[in-house]
Length: 142
Image (cartoon, rainbow, N blue to C red; front, side, top):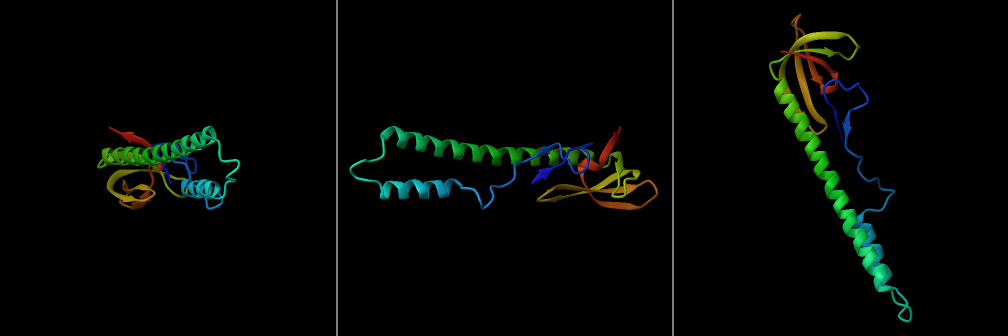
């Protein structure tokens, strides 16, 4: 999930959360299963070294902390984007439409989606632009 910010160039959001772990990589559950399988089938004459065992447990704790931090950062970026969008409601803005034209208008509505807030801009000529991302806003007028 990526969340845009005001004035970010289209296609290159200023803040993007890391992509979810793909199915081709190991996640924490897979590592725990692998670890338990290793313990189950270990050679009784040559058991796992305690230091290795503790190191692997520390790696699991680090992985969990990293995943928690990633989730918290995604939530923080989304909340910041939502707050930024709410502060723009009823403001006069200059934006770039899908064709690359500069449009002057007023933000009249905000819709929240899983990909971030989407703005509705009523242009000065009366036309309505929907699903406008924050990255499309170039200028906010006082």
